[in-house]
Amino acid sequence: MRGGRVGLGGVAPVPVRVPEAEAVLADGGSFADCAAAAAAAADPPDDTGGSAAYRRQLVRALVERACAQASGATEPKGAGTR
Image 1: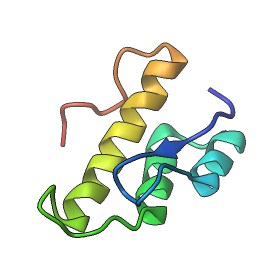
Image 2: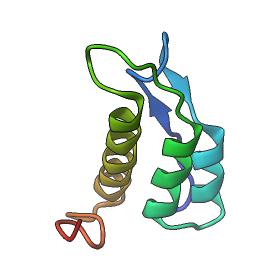
Image 3: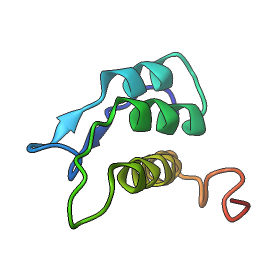
Image 4: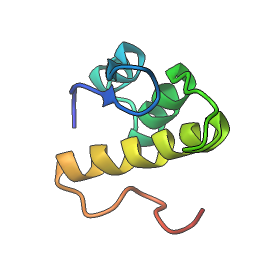
């Protein structure tokens, strides 16, 4: 998959796009690298829905999964090994 848009909800007061993660995809980076960029850019609050660290882990896992699904892959490489 080359290029795409990355948007996150639940990590800020309003949904946000993550241009850093989009740039990774545009440059031909891996889904894992895109997910890491999205997680690094996320600044979620600590609240009753989960800690900021937990939400960053979710961002990483869900962005990688979404990229794989959008590309037609069944699972991200290395899925189930973490």
